[in-house]
Amino acid sequence: MIEQLLDRVRYLIGSSVGERVRLRMEEFRRLGRYGSDKDLFLELCFCILTARFSAERCIRIQERMGEGFITLPEDYLARELKKLGHRYPYIRARYIVEARRHIHKLRWLIDSFDNGVEARSWLIENIKGLGYKEASHFLRNVGFDDVAIIDFHILNLLARYGIIEKPKTLTPRRYREIESILRVIASKLNVTLGELDLYLWYIETGKILK
Image (cartoon, rainbow, N blue to C red; front, side, top):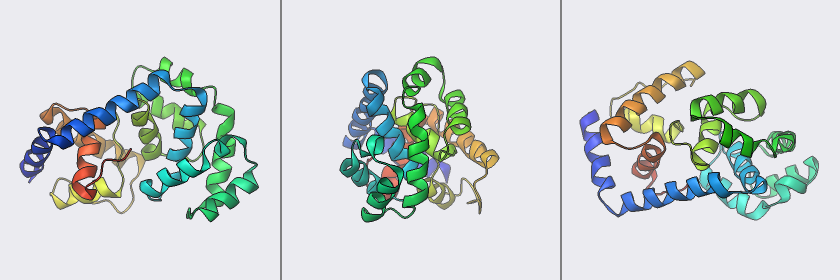
């Protein structure tokens, strides 16, 4: 059934969806090239919030919170996250406050690493609250296009097309295995992993977010 998925993505690449994907990827690259320390940190906070929570709702929270991610004390930040409906306001507030000490390292991260795989390892090791998915999400959103964002939407789609058996637990090893499968699919389609994620997300949700 992989050919059916390939055909569906090829159709999208040639449609208006393909143009929207290309524009969104350019937005990500611009953020990575020209974004300030504050801009990059706010994007990191968005990705911390997405762990086991809706990306669409996290976008709304990011828009409402703004620089509060940088300035608010942890207890007040947690209350605001709770008020805005986040499922895990207290632990996410703690992670965000702890991540503030890295706010001036994010530009260094983007400029120093040649590939997303190595940059992802640094993020996971140094910033609490980032697993493989969240670190990959941040990197894609700042211009790295060689890592995969594997969430339940992607797992459901791949399982439905018979490409994988949906894992009960997504361990780091299994994440990398599925990422390798997605890398092969992206190669067949002549797109990057970052672009492929947007196409697959569109197939599952009908939306192109970030």
